[in-house]
Image 1: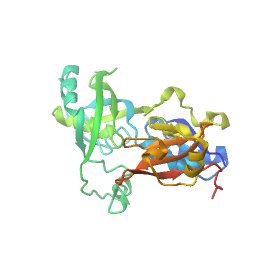
Image 2: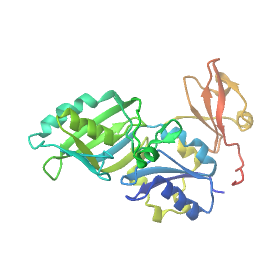
Image 3: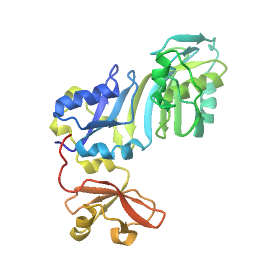
Image 4: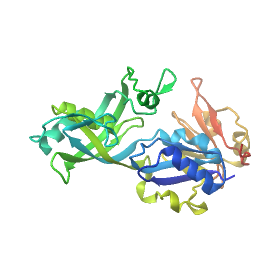
Length: 294
C-alpha cells in the first residue's frame, strides 16, 4: 500500500469522487480519499490522500484556499453557477467595475454565508444536493467564513467580471457571486471557477489525473505543510510512534499546535494536539510501518 499525497489538477466535468475512483485504479488500492470537495464544473487543486495519509486530510483541508472565476451579472441560476437553470434575469448594464469593487470590499473579512441547496452540506442527516434533486428546499443556518482577499477586474464580455478570492475553508465562491449580484441591485452567478491554491499547495505543482503515477506521490509529511514541524530524537520518537501522551517539554513544543512530529530521517510519526490540561496528545499516529489495506 502506498502512503502519500498527490496534488491533482481536477478537470471540469469530474466530481471529486470520480478523481478518487480513478486514483484507486491508478494506484491499485482502496484506501484513498480527498480533502475539500470541488464542484463538477470547477477545476484546479484537489488534494488526494493515499493509504494512511487519508487520516491526515483534515489538516490540509482546513487551510485557506484561493480561487479565480467569473461573476456574470444579470442572471441568477438554481445552482448559483452556470450548471443550473436560469431562475431570474435583471438589467444590470449600468454597473461599472468601480461599482463592483466598491460592493466587493464589503465582503472582505468575517462574513455569514447561507450554504446553497446544491451542496454537500448535511441538514437533518441528508445532503442538501440530495434534497434539491427531489425538489425539496430546507432552511439553512448561516455559516461564518472569512474572505481574506477579493479582487475584481473587468472580464472579456459586458457584465462579466473576473474575480480572485482567498478565503477560509468552507467558503462558497458561488454564494459570494450571488450575494454580490444582490448587493448591486440585481443578481449574478459564477462561472469558470478554478482553485489555484490550498494552503501552500499551488496549481503549478498539480497534475491532471491522466499524468498521475508513483513519481507524483509526495511523502506523508507533505500533508502537514503550513503546520508546525517538530523533529524528535530517537528516544522520543519511540514513544511518539506508540501514541504516548506527553507534556509540552517532553515533546519540545509550546503554543496551540497541531504539531507534525517527525523522526531524524524526516519521516512523519504522528500529529499531536494540545489538551486543556497543558499536555499534548496524538490526534493521528502513523508509527513506522504501513497498515494493511482494508
